Length: 222
Image (cartoon, rainbow, N blue to C red; front, top):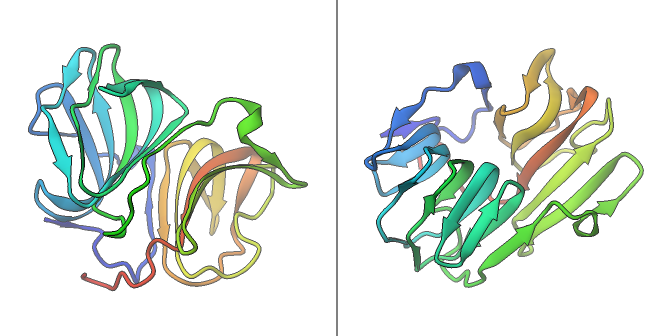
């Protein structure tokens, strides 16, 4: 299966373009944002757990990255309500479930083989954020190449001040405008290297989940 597999092209998926499809597990649905492979795939998805749904125990040979968007996501390590960022390194395993239901943003099989850090960050306290003139930043992960953060942008603030090698973002709250297009909460954008001066927060401002550097070396069709 190949979905948005050409990383040399920009991709924008708006909420009204979501296509929810059942996963192999009853009560769990997903929107496949990009994917190379079948069930064991390099994949970026939105995953929706119905109340009292669960997955059997399974491994993540290529690692797993999660941002909880609503509800509560749980596994043997605890309960993680909306606002938690989870990073499970390659070789990890778990048995996830949700008693009340949850919506999560998930990235699979996209970590470096040598990564071994497990990350758990509650982004809700203000103490987790650093404040600047035009944005607030909640750092989530950085390894010298990849950078992951939540950013709250003031109205009209450009997402990038300079050209980027590549980037990926999810609008968590508010709205962006990109090349004249409205990108409301839930919009997912993946960008190849370039400058994007027309990508900015709308008059309402925006909160973004933003990743840069992680697509270095990922070629079209890889």
